[in-house]
Image 1 (cartoon, helix red, strand yellow):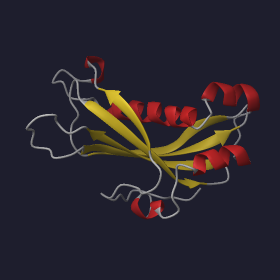
Image 2 (tube, one colour):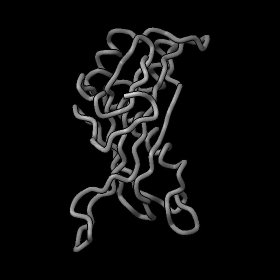
Image 3 (cartoon, helix red, strand yellow):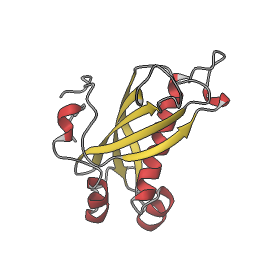
Image 4 (cartoon, one colour):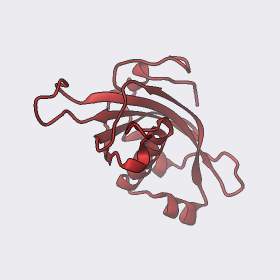
Length: 168
């Protein structure tokens, strides 16, 4: 699909799940999550995906001089999340390019424990981000083979059919 298009179908493949509780600081005066905070939730989930893959930003910078930076992102908001909701950020990496990776992230609210109208998790927001790997000078750097292999474990070659893809 081209940039700006989206699908209601979740991306298939291995998924990383990260729980987030909505705190008062995340909401506006009506108790609804402020739109920019979904991007913060997604950023935390991407960081934990790297950590769970045996990497972390601090050691990547220290050991290789490389850092990830967001080059492009978009978000679609489907339903509001509210104060005290338990959310799950699901992250997949459908595309790893030479110096960049695309990440698709869906944020779900857990189903209510008793008698709510929702039968299962509810899709709250969907985000897409392209990160680029930069060297110490801030120039794009090729993703090393060991890092590429770790990122690709979170992908599925057919997954890009359900998400944005703009090249890499």
